[in-house]
Length: 166
Image (cartoon, rainbow, N blue to C red; front, side, top):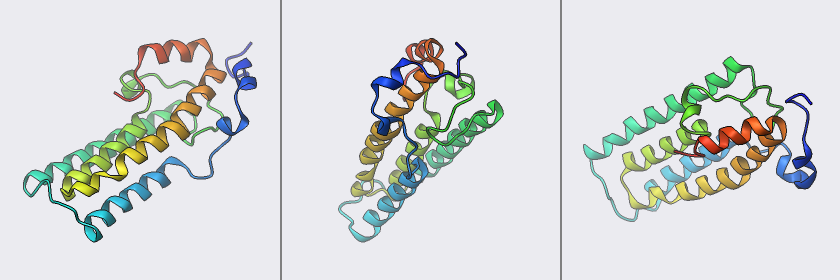
């Protein structure tokens, strides 16, 4: 059997868990970012961090963008699609993928955390756990099933040795 043939685990999964999503992760990311800005600006609760300490958030934003871009570039070099649930042609395990199975999502979370630090208000943090939950439940878990179906033991070995987040 070639590594691109579907395996039995697809038969046991609901089709909705393996179908392409209409709303892709960057949309959720931008909605969370807009929520962070909106909560900070229109519904301020309390200021936790003030400048110059809050400026550290800009560094985390830059790091998050770099991580996500580097990870996406690795997919491009491998010739496999970045869009979730499109037929993967190779399992990317090098570079940042040696340390985390989801560096693109991790980069997005770093940007959101950086924005919350930059704004410094307590309520700017509220959208972040919701974003992480959506990404974890709607993308990461189904993607892992999808990749297991495509790459089988190769993905299981990778999953065993590399953490989901960090």
